Image 1 (cartoon, rainbow, N blue to C red):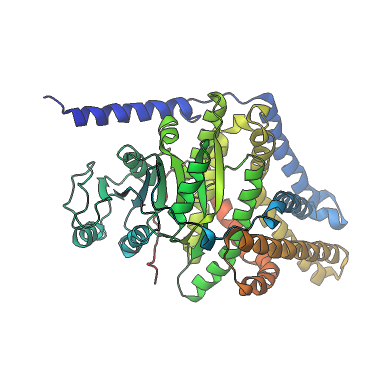
Image 2 (tube, helix red, strand yellow):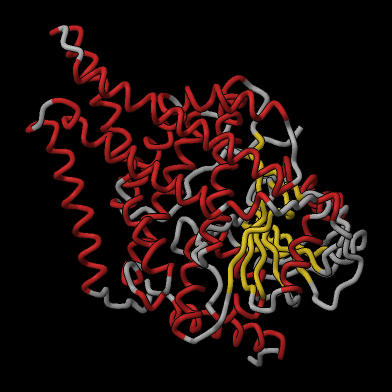
Length: 495
């Protein structure tokens, strides 16, 4: 049986992508950790055990050494971020000031990975079609949906149903829109299938439950045109939850969390150590994406792992590649609105974080990787145990409160409460600082953010922060159990 030239081309591209991934991935081709890397990881483990033991062998405030270590570490990171984000005081970036791109010598394609997203997919496609810079290609990477997505695409966009593994002809209604059907094997597999089909210079990934601001594609395209060495960039996301009391609770706290996180990403970008992009809205140079082998189908956080691999590849092949966060590329994305949904998301995120840290542990402490190896990755190594510090510090606080009611001794409890109150004040200052910079950076202004930030800073250590740590601890068990599936995701449509 003879194969057509198109089928041969597809087989060759599959083989090339798989080989490129095998060569670039430390999961497939492990690198030997250096002695420095081993010392850093063993020191963190030993220090953690010593700190925990202080509760049993110390008295006074040092019995709460776990909490003191957590407060000191978190505060040190806030100081670092504050210092690195000072340039934002002079940088006024507003989306309303952008000149929308109408034409560009650089072609831009969008991949929308979708699995059972019928409630939101149509709105997402509509937002893409209304961009000031309309993408040259949009591929709906349908990951084996069985919820009515097929009927939606046929009814609304005039598609004929393609065979599994095949891409459709262009939509008769929107000629830049294509439908790629693949068997359900996960988001990374669907993305890989799409990047082999897309033919543009820049590839933008957009989750099916993410709505782009009207200038988002323009901002992303402009960044890649201005910086030839830019290979990956992330937009700035705002979380949107359901209009229920639990949804409002999680949207409130996640809004401030997202603001702080994106301000932190700017800080790490300043020292050329940005690792975390948001696959819900991210851009990649297509050629670089193919060179490193696409997305890792075995990782729970394929976007995070990909940037590690790109950073590694750049050093190993002497490429001057850069990664950026763009304050003028804005989007809104669906976020968990229930306790179960939130904990499952954070379990997956942290388990994927641990996977990636383990596979790339040889980079930790290595001066070969610059600030990434000597600054960022040691910090990430500490972050692997941070949820233990957070949860145990809270449990010890409850123990001190119980001891006060039993014995009437206030020395330890008052000292601990003083430290906590000081930390709350520091967090409040950082909250307000982050919001001010965020609004200056993105052009998104809201006076109510400052008012509610004060309340959030007081309540967060005893509510949302504990939930984050709980989800991360669940991630530890998920990682140790060797789980590689996302689990069922519950989505609600935008209203």
